Amino acid sequence: MHRALVQVVSARISAIVHATENPEKVIYAMRQACPQELFQSKPERRGLRGHYGNEISTVTLSLRGRPAGLFFSHLARILPSGDRETLLNDLDTRLDEEGRLHLRLGKEQCFRGALRLKDQDPIKILVSFRKSSDPGLRLAEDIRQFLDIPLDHNGSPSDAKVR
Image 1 (cartoon, rainbow, N blue to C red):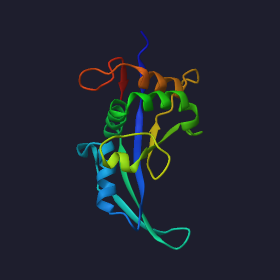
Image 2 (image 1 turned 90 degrees about the vertical axis):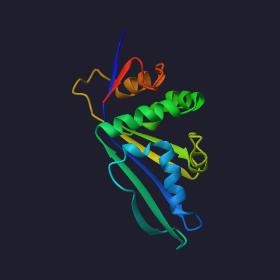
Image 3 (image 1 turned 180 degrees about the vertical axis):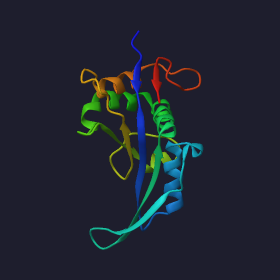
Image 4 (image 1 turned 45 degrees about the horizontal axis):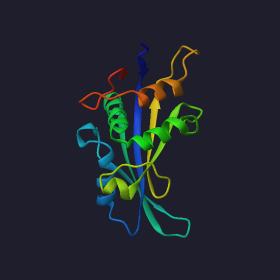
């Protein structure tokens, strides 16, 4: 049986905080997607001005190395099966030319603890993978295999290795 090897290098979780939103609630929603114990640093906040001069800010949580791989495994486990199926079907359009996976989760749904793929008012997730030196390997296929395999009782992939 083929064992997919998906090596996650980093993950970035970010969201825009509008002037009408409580930044702590947005951070709480972001942390619903990623367990607190995986964070290596505090959220980074940046103040910005919107298109119409309104005050907005961005909040970013960054993971590198093993915590990033654990985050990706966690995300694969907690996404509803319908959203995972959507991700499998749309995977080629969610990978950029550098092999980074772009996901968007609904901010409000995350706040309620129900992670769902959604493009409006999203929490953005960017996952970077180590590129293979073997040109015959396709990152999209390895990710697709990883997402499509059964998970064990701990929520870990039972037939793939994530580092």
